[in-house]
Length: 432
Image (cartoon, rainbow, N blue to C red; front, top):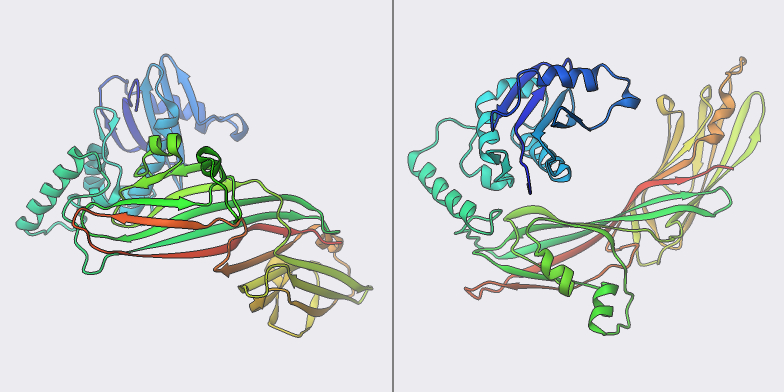
C-alpha cells in the first residue's frame, strides 16, 4: 500500500458495535465507531459514501452480509489499494469460515486475530494468498509438531521469496494443467430483433498440478500483440478490454511485450478476466406471439431458433416467458423439451436439454383466466424473455489459446488441457 498504510481495521455489526478490531499503529481514538455510525448508519442510503474523511482520518468500508468491514487511515492513503485489500480479506475469511457474518466471527476470534496479524503488518498488506495462509494458520488445534515445522519452513520461503503465492517443494505424481476459457454474454434485444446492448465478459480459469517452480507462457489471438510485432494472421484477432490479471502475472512483460508469463499458484485460480464491448447477434433467438387474448383465456406461440454453427450444441437451455399474474389451467405442446408453469415467478419455463445449432423449435401454451380480472394482468408484456444456456467448445468472441508453454528446471513434460465454454449472462429479449 504505497504511501500511508492503514491505521486500524474494524468489524462492526449492523448497529455499528465492534465485533472484533485490530489497531496496527495506535493513531486513532476510541470514538471511531461513533463517527462511522453518524456518517453511514444514520444517513439515508442515497447519501452514504464508501469513503469519507473527518479530521485527517479517512474511513473506507464495505458491507458483507450483516457486518461492516471498516479500514481507517491517517492522512491521504491509496484508497484503491485499501479496497483491494478489504475485498481480498473478505475472500480469505470466507474461505476459512465458509460464511463471513456476525456469528462466524464471534465463533472464530482466535483465527480471526491470527489472520489479521499475518495479512497486515504495521498497516501494510503482507500475505493475502489463502493457500499460503492455510499452510500454518490451521482451523484444527491438534497438529503434529513435525507437520507444523514443515509448514513454518514453507511459509518463511514463500514470504521471503518473490513468489509469495507458491511455496517451494510442490510435487505431483502427474504434471498437468487445465485451462478453462469461460465467456458470459450480456444481451438486450428489442422485439423486432435489434440488438440494443451486447457485451462479452470473459474469464480464464486454471487448475495447476505442476511440480517445482514452473514458468508458463500463454499466447492468445490478441490483436494488439500482432500489431506490436508486425505479424499478420489468417485467423480472427480480438481486441481485449478491461483486462485484470492474477498477481502471479508479470505486468511489466505484458505492458512492454504483451506476453502473459507467470509462475502459477498450486491448485485452482483465476488467471485473468476481460471484456469485449462488441455487437453480437443473439445466439438463441426467441419470438413470442400472443395468438389469442380474451376474457377467459390467453394463447401463446413461442419460437426458439439457434443462430450458431450446426456442429455446436447448447446444453440445458431454459427460456423464461412472462405470463399474466392471474392465469390458471396451463396446457403446453412442444416438439422438443418440457414446459412448466412457475406461478411464484409469473412465468412459464421451456426447458430444452440439448439445442443444436441452426435448429428451430415451436411451443404452444394456453392458460385460462378467472372470472374476476386482476388489475396487473397486462403487465406481463413488459417483462422481457430471459434465456439461460451453456455452449461447450465454443466462444462467442472467437478468442483462442494459441499456445501454453510450460518450462521447469527439472525438464519434466506436462500436459496442458484447454476447454472453451460460452454461457448466458444477463440475456434478455423484449416481447411484442
